Amino acid sequence: SFANLRIHPHGLVLVDMQSYNDHMKGREEVDQLLNKVEERMKELFHGNIKRVKRLPAILRGGVIDRYWPTADGRLVEYDIDEVVYDEDSPFQNIKILHSKQFGNILILSGDVNLAESDLAYTQAIMGSGKEDYTGKEVLILGGGDGGILYEIVKLKPKMVTMVASNIDQMVIDGCKKHMRKTCGDVLDNLKGECYQVLIEDCIPVLKRYAKEGRMFDYVINDLTAVPISTSPEEDSTWEFLRLILDLSMKVLKQDGKYFTQGNCINLTDALTLYEEQLSRLYCPVEFSKETVCVPSYMELWVFYTIWKKQTDI
Amino acid sequence: SFANLRIHPHGLVLVDMQSYNDHMKGREEVDQLLNKVEERMKELFHGNIKRVKRLPAILRGGVIDRYWPTADGRLVEYDIDEVVYDEDSPFQNIKILHSKQFGNILILSGDVNLAESDLAYTQAIMGSGKEDYTGKEVLILGGGDGGILYEIVKLKPKMVTMVASNIDQMVIDGCKKHMRKTCGDVLDNLKGECYQVLIEDCIPVLKRYAKEGRMFDYVINDLTAVPISTSPEEDSTWEFLRLILDLSMKVLKQDGKYFTQGNCINLTDALTLYEEQLSRLYCPVEFSKETVCVPSYMELWVFYTIWKKQTDI
Image 1 (tube, rainbow over the protein chains, first blue to last red):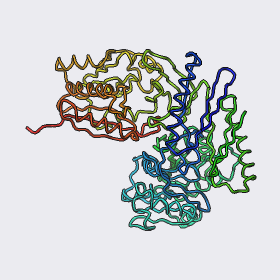
Image 2: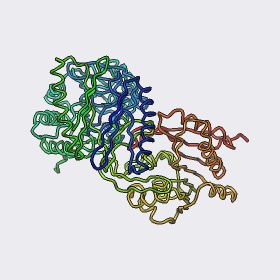
Image 3: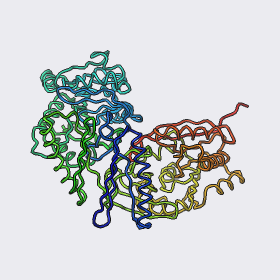
Image 4: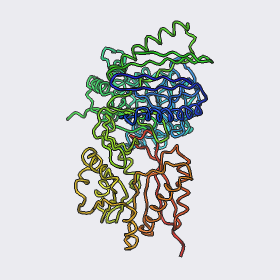
C-alpha cells in the first residue's frame, strides 16, 4: 500500500491511498485505513475541517472493468461482476458484461449500447407505444442486438426487414447468445414468418428499394453511428447521416414515420447540429423529440420522430 | 501539476496526474497531457500494451461536488453545475443541487433523495398508476419534498393528511422554494381544499388515529429513514420500522394498501431483512414488490405494496 498527501494553498488537503490487492478485499482494507486517517486528521485539526469528502475506491487493472463513462464524459461505475463476451471484430471491440442490476450489457468500442434492462430504449425508438404496427411494413437499419425486431414481431406486422451490415455480424452473434432477454429467439434464424434479416450494407439496400419503389410505414434507424460529432467540419459523418436520412425518406410512405435515437440530453451542440441536418434533406420534414431514461445509460437520452411535411393540396 | 507513475508486478502500470486548477479548464489540460503521455507510452512499449484505460479526471475540492455515490457504494459523477441550497438542520445536512439533466436534486446527508426528473419515484410509491384515489382517505408519512402530496391532490381524493416531523421542516422550506417542478404550490400552505400537512412526529399521530378509529384507504410511507442496515443486531432501526408498520396497519382499512420504497436492488440482504419484518407484524400481511428506474438514482430501486391478508370467513 502507498499513500500520498498533498497540501494545497487555500487549505485543500488531498489524501490518496493505493493498495495493490485482490478486488473487493482491497477496497474494504483501503476503507478501514481511510477511517483511521480521517479520525486522526480531525484530531490534528482540532475540528477545524470545513468539509470532508471521501470517494469510493477506484478499482484499476482488474479483469473486470467497472468504469464506462457516459456520453457526456462523466465517470460512472457499474456493478459489473462478469465478462461474458469480449471480441474484436475488424470494425470494433464488442463486449457483453454482466451487471447485477441491469443484466447483460452490450458495450461497443467502450460505449454502453444496450442492457437487458433497457426495454425503455426499444420502446422509445418504436414510438413509445403510440404506434399501431399491426399489418405494417417496417424497415430497421442496424439494430444488431435484435431488441427492436423482437418487440415489433410480437405486434403482428405485415413484414419487418432488418438490414444489418457486416459491422453488425459479430454483434448479432454475441447478442443472440447472451442478450436473450432483449432479442428472444428472433436472431436464431435470419428469416421468420413476418421478418427477414439482411446482412448487407444499408446504403445499397435503400437505393435498391428506392429504385423499386418499395415503401415502408416505419423506418427505424438504430445504426450505431451516433452523431457524436460537434464540429461541423467533420462533414463526412454528417453527410453519411444525411444520405441515410434522404434515402430513408425516399422509401417512407407519405404518412410514414422515421424513428431514431439522438444523443444524451447534455450534448446540446450535437443535437442542434443533427436537427440542422433535418432541414437540409431533399424533402421538407418535421420532427418531434422525446427525452427518455434508459436504465443502464445513467444519463437521459433524446429520441427523434421524423415525418414528411404534409403539403396542402 | 504533478504526476505519479507506478509499475506493479504482473505488468500493471498506473499513471496518476494531478493539476491544481480551475474547474473544467484543469480537466481539459489534464486530458491533453494524458493524450501525450499515452502516445509516448505506446511508442516506448512498441505496441506491446494489452489494454489502456483512461478515466475522466476527478474534480476535488471545488465549491461544487459532483460525486454522490449510489446506495450500493458505487462512484458516480453527476452533471451538477450549481449549489442551490445548502443548510444544516439539527438533524441532517440538506442540499439542493442543480443538475443539467435532472433539474434540482434534493440530497439529505449525502444521499440523493429526489430530483425534479424523478416523477417515476412518486408514481411508483403511489402504486404505479394502478390505484384510483378519487374520494379516498390518504395518509402520507414523511414526504417532505411534497411530490406525493402534489400528485395525489390532482386525483381528487377525499382528504390527504401528510405527517411531516420537525426533521422535515427545513426540507419542506427548501423544496417549496427550489423543487417546484416536484411539489408545485402544494407546500405553500399547510392546508388546502382536500389536504392538510401536520408538522408533528408521526408516531403519536398514528397512535391518536388508531385510538380514535380513524381509517385510511392508503398509507404511503415516505420517511427518509431507509432500511439501509444489514446487521440484525441494529435492533432499534428495525424496531422503529416495525412500530411504524404496526401502527400503519392499525389505521389501514381492511382492503387498504400501504406503499413504501425499499432499497436499491443490489442491497439484497437489507431487502430480505425488511421482508422478514413484514412477517412479524401484529396482523398477517402480504406484499408485492416492483423494481423501478428512478432517473437521478443511477441504480434500480425496489418499491413495496403491502396489504392485510384477507381471512376466509
